[in-house]
Image (tube, rainbow, N blue to C red; front, side, top):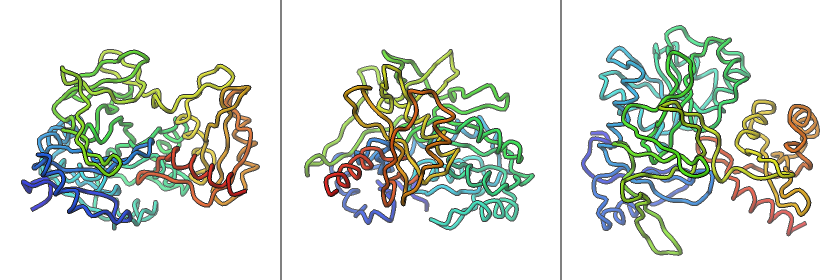
Length: 363
């Protein structure tokens, strides 16, 4: 019996973190979360918490995605995302509900050529990847297998140039917007290629500043978190059940345009700068060994740094600055041993800021 079918609380986390998930499950039961799947997440804020999702919410999300894709018993999903992340875990539920099957790459063994070969060998028709993995496929100039009819792309900003390069190699990418709190997807691109549209099970609205709020059958139950040694449950919904996502969104009827995290926006020389968008551009240019970081500056409000993993970066700095507006230019290179990232490759800026501060104080 799989975890999503077993009527008991289950906590899932990256094995590399060596977390005692049994202890977390016991704590969840004490708080009444007896029939939920718990996903550990830190997002880009680097504040660890557990997101509790009911099996009903996970099923609702899977049904909506299946309906959007026209998934059936003829489909074969190739899973390349970790199951401790909702994007990877949901694949098994989608296949179960549609009557299809799942093939999986070995855990922790991402390799672009191996993925493309596995697609061909198992006759994969559907998959889900993050932008970093798309970058690897394009960098290796791998042609898409003929049976693969859709690759959902989420977990970060997909640069337009990268999407176009992937399309030229035959990869049929469908951009998505979602989050763990929504049991995966909120909006997905359609076959008409006219942008992302809300899936059928969601209501959405924007609040002041353009922050997206959502309500629907796939919304999470609660957060479980440890604050200063004390466990607590938090249900951050208003009285009508709306959840504020922390994302800045353009919403036109049911068409959605992701504009950035509310906490990823800084001002430089009075101009608004989206760090997520700059990070996506940087990774398209130079891969994942670099990051953009903003630090306070008395004159300009903030200045932007190029963080280089393992050193170097002069050529990347010059090439990047040639492509962007003056206020978006990077002013300095700092080196770190390793850029902290989430399981899906997102830069964890608070952890990176701490690392930079430690390096500075030691210098």
